[in-house]
Image (cartoon, rainbow, N blue to C red; front, top):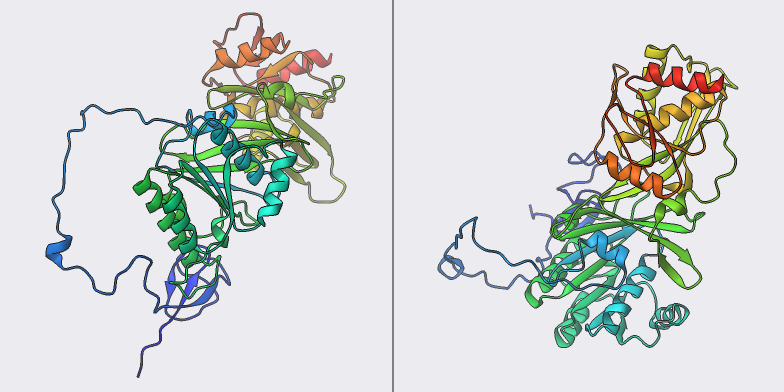
Length: 456
């Protein structure tokens, strides 16, 4: 019996199956297996495989302590982007940028390549989703029409690679990798096979020609970059451009960076003329605060090396139905459940029959455990219906025993708070700061007593 050349590839993880199934055995995703031709040769494969003697080469080993030279970097002129990239873009690197549709990925990258082109770098922008006229109109709106950027609208990988080899640019933007296709594969554009193969060829070109390749990637409904995860492993940096459309600011966050830190963020504000950098994001996140109200606490957090102040809002209300509701925006729901359990078990506060709503103002997403104390203060404030001091901030980690544990970079947090006019702070014991009166709390019980005294 002849062997079938058809295989079924999972569009979530890239696993190959001999027959169709409703569920992928590798990643557990449902209805993600798509039929593809298994007879296609991988990109770059020759008709005749080289012999073992031809492929054999000597493995070169070097000393770990040998002298190294720091990589040269191209500064884009956008300080927030350079901060996230680690000081600039490294020649020969491949960067993957993801984000929700319409969040501003194309606008950000067009501004970056235009600034590099004006500084003397050779830049190419290849759009697979928009016509060249659309990109030119955006450039005129952003005031970048005079930038010497080479523009093309193409989706064929072979045509793009031929053009890049002739131009030999310093930086090339491919928008987006899901629209590319290669005639050496029978799969449709956007499938796992096409995305993986096209990304591999572009990364190989970046390493060979010492060109910066920036790939734009679509995201799934879960917020992850679409396509196989192997693409994220191949590139040197993965940046997420996030934010709410109802808010004017956008956040660029690095989740992988071989040439810099992965905990830095860049903050931009979306205006009519494009994206503007925000030098002081704390002032932006706290903008529009009204009079002191119960359930509002200012958290002094850290995003990489940058202190950021933001408001955490909590509302504790009687449950309208039998089952209390827990709604969280911008924070970990599991972390909220832990803080509520500690407050109930250690302080006797009854949240069991109440709805709890928690929101991080401005749409910022907080992943830092140091926000525990600010969240607890906001919850207690709403529970007791007493406002916290408007000129105060809070930070600290809460353990299951109810103890408030110290967190790092307390001096930078307090310095940022003093710069913005805050003169009080709820913090773990042992924290001191110039210009800020620190109210030390060692346990959540002490926090409840202190806030109860303020209520009286």
